[in-house]
Length: 243
Ligand SMILES: Nc1ncnc2c1ncn2[C@@H]1O[C@H](COP(=O)(O)OP(=O)(O)OP(=O)(O)O)[C@@H](O)[C@H]1O
Ligand SMILES: [Mg+2]
Image (tube, rainbow, N blue to C red; front, side, top):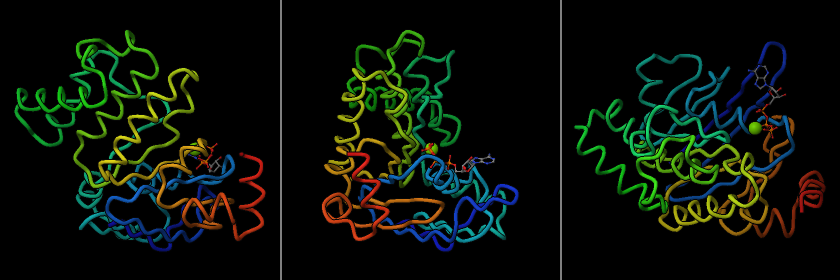
């Protein structure tokens, strides 16, 4: 369902992503791990053109774009195929939880407000936020804000949800509730790509783990391989350190 070919990204002289190939099937949970500064966030951001790739091709669902020849309309189409959950929740401070989740349904998908709010309520209930629908972000804990962030991503109706270290800014006591919501999504076969430092989560949930270093995919495989029997010495060293 996702096909990335020969994706590269440079910032000035520095090539941050080098000829990345990536395939993700519908319903697959992919975890991306690797050292800091390796290009994990840049890869996710390129997938929906938050960063413009320097070269290569990206297909998500039935939308295919070529980095070197892409129109505004194609970027818009591609963006509708995915949604993002960021480390810092990036909620609208002046909107309630309910309004935050309904926002994209109203502005992007042009749903009537009443219908959008009904969907938003259902999604917030599904992430355990029924008691907090009308609260503003400042009135919510970090874990609660991130659950709103996930419900908002679910509302975007894209093919895939992209998570960039969704728990790393949270106080430790809020991490588990967010991971629980992500596990629930995984059980529903929501296609997800998750950049994470949570090795235990990657091991339990991912169908495929990708180890990146220095802008390349060094090794990919099932968690049993990456964590249990890594084929590459650099994967082995990273996993040993991270364990
Ligand atoms: N807008 C930018 N301009 C210039 N360089 C950038 C920009 N964004 C990222 N980089 C550089 O690209 C490289 C990869 O960054 P990226 O954020 O993708 O790493 P990462 O693997 O997500 O790291 P971390 O685990 O710390 O989040 C880094 O060397 C970073 O300094
Ligand atoms: Mg990052």
